Each structure stands twice: as C-alpha cells, then as structure tokens.
Amino acid sequence: MIYLDHNATTPLHPQAFEAMVPYLRERWGNPSSPYRFGTEARVAVERARTRIAECVGCKPAELVFCSSGTESDNLALRGVAQALKSKGNHIVTTGIEHPAVLNTCKALEREGYRITYLPVNRDGVVEIEALAASLGAQTILVTVMHANNETGVVQPVEEIAAITRKRGIVFHTDAVQSAGKLPQRLGELGADLITFSGHKLYGPKGVAALYVRDGTPLAPVTTGGAHEHGLRAGTENVAGIVGFAEAVTLAFESSETEGQRLRALRDRLEREVSSAIRRVKLNGARAPRVPNTSNMSFQGVDGESIVLGLDVRGICVSTGSACSTGDPEPSHVLLAIGLSPREAQGSIRLSMGRETREEDIGLTVQTLVETVERLRRVSSARDEAD
Ligand code: PLP
Image (tube, rainbow, N blue to C red; front, side, top):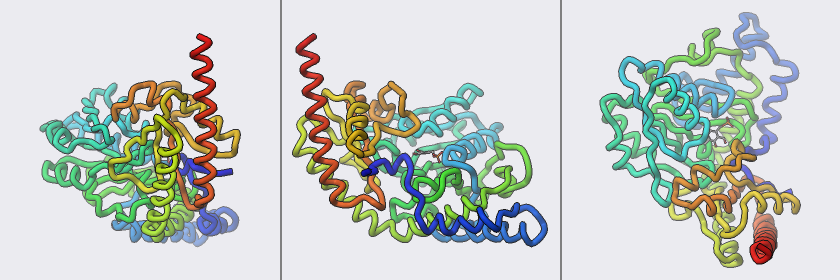
C-alpha cells in the first residue's frame, strides 16, 4: 500500500506507541485521585503538558487538553462567544475553514451571532485588507485557519494577529494541518487561541489541545469537574496525552529536515504529473503551502473515480477532507478559490508523510497517468454514445 492521505490521519509513531503502553497496561490510575497511583498519572499528564509547551513555545498552563481538533475548535469559538456575549456578537472567519469551524459558526449564527465569511483569492489566501475592513465595534473573535487541509495553503496568521491585537479582538487559528509540518513554533504565530491535534502528527487519535494565551476570555463549553483549569471537564486521556507529547516532540524536532524532504517529493510529483497528463491544474500551488500537500484538478474526470481507481491499485489518496467523503457536493474550499463545480469535482488531494519514499512517487505518477487516461477514454466513449 502507498498511503498518500496524511492530512486525513497519520500512523502512530512507534515511539509514541511505546510511551503510551505503560499508561494503558499498569499505570491506569485517575489523575484526579489523591493517592500515589493517581498522582503517578497526574505527573505523566503534567510532564506531557510541559514537553508540549516547550515544543510549541508557550507556558504549560496555557494548554488545555481535549479529545479532538474538532472539540478544540468548538471550545475556542463557543468559549469566546459565550465569554464575550455582552461585548458583541460579530465573528469573522473565512469560507475555506474546516467543518469543525464552519459548522460551529453556522450553529452560532442560529444562536444570534453575526458571522462574516471572508472570501479568499485565486491562490486560496485571505486578503488582509478585506479582513481589516470587516472588523467593527461588535467584533469579538476572528478565526482563520493556519494551513488548509485540502490545498495546504498557509494563511498570513502573523499579519492577522498584528491587526486583531491592535483592535483588542481575540484571534483563533486552527493549526491542525500545520503543527509539526512547519518549523515555526505555534506560540510565535501571535494568535490568542491555537488548535492542534494528535492524529495529524503521528500521535494517537482522540487527543488534541487548545493553546489559550494567558488572559484570553474563554468560557467552558462542557459542564462537569474542574479539569484542565476549569476549561474542559472530563477525566484526562492519560495514555493519549503521553503519546501526544512524544509525537509533538518528534514532529517539531524533525519538521525542518522532514519538510525539505517532503517538499522535494511533492515538487517532483507535481512536475511529473503536469508533464505527463494534459489538462491538469495544481490548486494553491502559487501560494505558500505546507510541504506535504498537493491538490490537483483533472479536466473531464471525476475525482471520486480517480480515488477508487488508485485504491484498486493500492494507493490511498482523497478528494478532500475525510469528513466530507461520501458527500456529493464539490469542495467548498475549491469553489472558494474560483474553481467551477465541475473542476472541483475532478480534484484529488495527495498528502505525503514520514514513510513516503521516492519510489512511491514514481509509482503514483505512473498509476495516476494510467487511471486518468482510462477514465478520460471511458468518458469520451460515453459522450460519443450519447
Ligand atoms: N481542523 C482541520 C484543519 C482539520 O484538517 C481537521 C481534521 O481533518 C480538524 C480540524 C479536526 O481534527 P480532529 O480530526 O482531531 O477532530
């Protein structure tokens, strides 16, 4: 199998797995219990928090562990909306966010909040001037993702942070697809709230974090015990958190060298596909991108059929975010960057990772060429028959 869908999920790093085992097997105590067996678990959670804080460049107390990137996004958006309800009701986001943010915005809209969905340009980047112009006296939150899950395009979050800071507006960024892929430390992005998730950086599924800059107004969205500084009730996923810390450490240590290696593989893939296949478009390729992601549109072919055709040959790619698989609608991200619905339907995403090798690229290009040619022959035969 050639797995080229690392933006959907990544395999668990063997070292992360090893680090977790003792907390699944022997040290399964509740970190809130007062006796030594519980304290051991508490120490593991706090040690993991400190390790992650060192890697991402923040204070340990600024990290809230939760169960997924989705939950972290929900806590950020709903938490600020709730905490600043009396101050204003306007939230600014973009049309290309992950459903974890977009659908939360839609839910908040139904509760009476006003949401501005900013457009992006043809490269997939939000225009800073438009963002600045959208802010008003009622604006309580700006949420703009760092790297897009479908195109890999990186947004100018530092510039956005400089604007929101000046205006005293809380800024959240969803860094699920950039954390560990870019050498930049998350704390240096300038955002007040940052989401990142374990299973996108070779950690376990079911664990993530929200970075909450000291002093950021945030209300809890779950009711229960006083876990995670009162911001996220629920017994901590001790083994998951320990594995997450190991994975974060490894990902940030290797992000520079691994990024260079993946960028070279991605560039080779795009070069060879563009020269071997006619009528192909590389989406977002002119903008800054995370190094592992490539999004391509093939004219006259259905992306879903390419995915299935490659799957038969043992190659895993996707048409967009895993959450929208089975969704017949064209990608909202590709429509937002100006693709027609037909072009968007003809798109696939290839996302490389730690185990991707040169020979995988050669085989993928060859299989992709054969698959696209076969599908085009079938569709032109069908058109002629019609
Ligand atoms: N945000 C982005 C940009 C993502 O790509 C994803 C997952 O695909 C999420 C949030 C949700 O993360 P999780 O799968 O941990 O809920």
